[in-house]
Each structure stands twice: as C-alpha cells, then as structure tokens.
Amino acid sequence: MTLNQARDRMVAAVREVPPLDLAVAGALAILGFFQSDSALMLAGVLLSTLPLAVRRTHPPISVVVPLAGAAMVFLAERLPVDWPLAVWISAAICFYTLLGMIDRRLAWVAGGLVTLLTLGLGASAWYYNREEIIPFLVALAVVAVVVTLLSDVRRSRTEVTRVRASNVETLREQAAMAERA
Image (cartoon, rainbow, N blue to C red; front, side):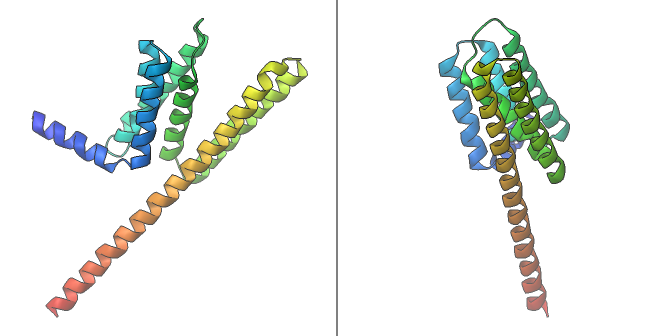
C-alpha cells in the first residue's frame, strides 16, 4: 500500500464518523490535555476516542482499542495520583463505543447491568457507612444511563439514514429503468 492510499483510507474513515463523534473526541482530547500533564492520561483519552474513526473499517481493531482505553482508565485509578474528570469521560466514551458495536438488545442489557452494579455499589457503601462516595456512584449510574440512551439514539439515527439512502437508490434505479423503457 502506498502512502497516498493509506492517506485516502484514513480520510475516508474520518468522513464516515458523524460530526458529534468528532466533536466529542476533540473535546476529550482538549480536556485531557489541560487537566493533566500525564502522557498516560492523554494516551487513555486518545485510545478511547480512536474507535470512533476506525470501527466501521476495521472491526477487530475497534474492539481492542476501547478495551485498551478502559485498561488505561483502570490503571489510572490504581495509581497514587488524583486523576481528573477526563479519566471518567474517557471511560464513558469507551462504554459508548462498545455499546455502539454490539446488538441493540445486548447494549440495553449491558447499560442496565452497569447501572444496577453502580447503584448496588452505592447501596453497599451506604451499608458500610461510606456515605462520601454515594453521590459519586449515583452520578456514575446516571452517566451509564445517559450513555446507553445516547448510544441507542445514535444507532436509530444511523438506521434511519441507511433506510433513506436505500430508498433514494431504489428510486434512482426505478427512474433509470423508466427511462430505458
């Protein structure tokens, strides 16, 4: 593959990404850069947003990349540093990307399980008198619900766009056949 072919493939992959995804990826990169000097932080943000560009053209890579981003977030949590909000936004984007790549029903089940697990952790924290983390866990559950809803809305819009494109193509074919006849 020549350099020009590689560049053309990359441009085509970026053109397939909806503008909202590009805006979210850019905002995450900026937030990660300004809130943390760490190369690990920036790598986590970039890894978690990369699938937005490659998931349609390279499905195996698009499964590995968000998992790598999630692993970065997991490692960041274990390090003895106070990590900024961008870590959690990066995790939400990983979750959003994974939900976008699986079946709709399975995505709803995964979103529901993450929400219930988070609320269960909140109940456990309340039981063990750790009230200081309950608001954080409730906020995390709300984020999981919002991310699941956004993923479903995006999937619905993509399906509507595909149906419209199919209808336009059918009309063009019918018009071409009518001209020939």
